[in-house]
Length: 285
Ligand code: SF4
Picture 1 (cartoon, rainbow, N blue to C red):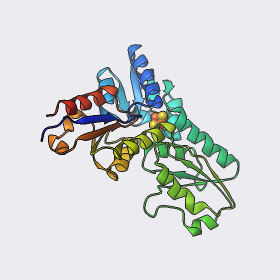
Picture 2: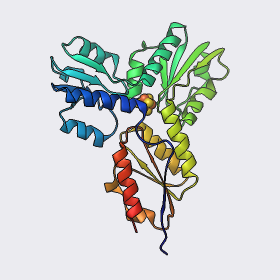
Picture 3: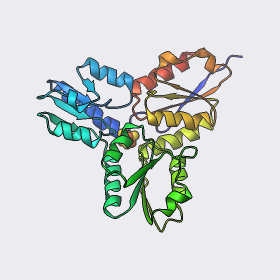
Picture 4: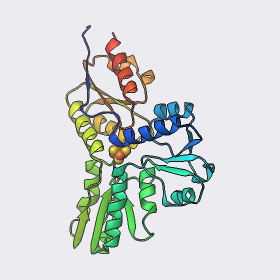
């Protein structure tokens, strides 16, 4: 049977304000000439980062590799304190691309620490953002819980503290934050700062909403992007879903018998990539 396929884009998809902010810093700095470094992948999208590399951006993972006399841009999700210290000891111009919503996590964790709370970071300890956040806290004064499976605070842990404060990785899902917070109920003083970024939250809610109304979801974004991966995890629990980085990965077989197709994209996915995917699907017979 032949029919016209319907394609819907989630209400919130693609570049968030933190990515727009750092993209502007990078493009203006590259246009100004000189040697320009990014410390860490500036955003989690290989296509966009590849374009900047072609224009001369040098992406390094260690502050030591930034040459004196150059300009260095710190990635949107921040870098550890040790890397900041190395940069500050060098003769380099530092442009801080850390997203203000990531900075807010640092500020809230610092507030908790100064006010005598044991700090819990709800998030993935292997994610660069969480590694950077944790690096600003003294050993023994904080703990990270992912909220997945059994990685949540247990009764023994809870009984050790009278004051516990919680902050969250900006790209965490509401459910994982709940998984970490609920077992803490019963602590004498519990203070939770919901630092999940509203851009992430909107994208997750609109993806969930769209996924419940279509036959198939396509989620576009870097495979190394935490927020894109979360969108994929949310959608695949509701409907058949595929996570791709670009239109090149689309497979006509996925669309057999699927009339309504939903599209969403992570916070670091450029508009051009989203448009390419929509065009590809709309021209599929
Ligand atoms: S996803 Fe949120 S925290 Fe991350 S860069 Fe975008 S606005 Fe900032």
